[in-house]
Length: 147
Image (cartoon, rainbow, N blue to C red; front, side, top):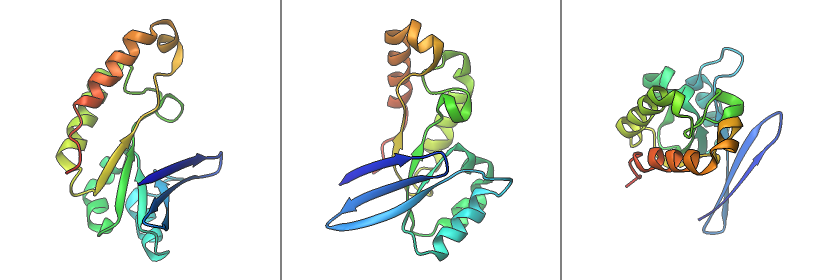
């Protein structure tokens, strides 16, 4: 399976090539007060078979589970630009541990096939690259791999 990720200021798209088919999906995040489950309903009606989720789905978890159906998903982990932290940020350890717990408890019901992470970002990452990278990798290893 080959994946290509493209991000622009207006939208995110995820394309997955699978056996000569091209699947197109959108990244689902809270948007102008609209909950993720509502956005999933819309993309279901469009016939999309894939969505990339963000941590915002955990604030709307039960509704998201009900609306996903058989839609395959990926999970975009927090990054500095959108969330103010990433998985290499030791000062946000409790947020990271909580998110790992939520992912591990719900990845099957959310049809998560992968988690996407950016490399360490920000001032601390630049000053302590090796330490930040090791912490990121420690956290990623705690995420249960899809079966």
